[in-house]
Image (cartoon, rainbow, N blue to C red; front, side):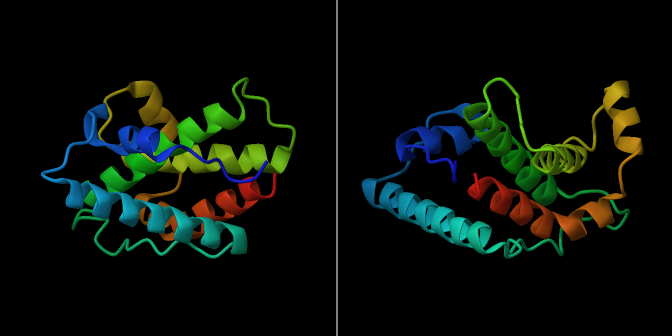
Length: 156
């Protein structure tokens, strides 16, 4: 199936904080933001196609107690949201024929969720997350794991 393409005008709303419509102080800023976003998408697509780990700067993703920082939560929340939208667009019925792809997708969703929702008070999620690796281990594997999943998706 290849990578999923989303019209930039729709994509901007999907990535904008709190699902608000994007606004810029002037057209120049809007163009610069769009160009930067398109360059990021292009670079990510290249990395996925070549199965190269994403260049995610994760050194400040844990605080002194070993808990995810705001930066880690923001990144994983955004990636998780995009991944969920991509999955809905690709597999609206949730059917994945390839067992390896299904396991890789589930692993990505679970690990991203643990970091993104680390302060959850939901007992069911807490129980689920307790069986997953520690934050340090998750953050160490995310760049390669997400790239592997992107590579896998690019092959369909």
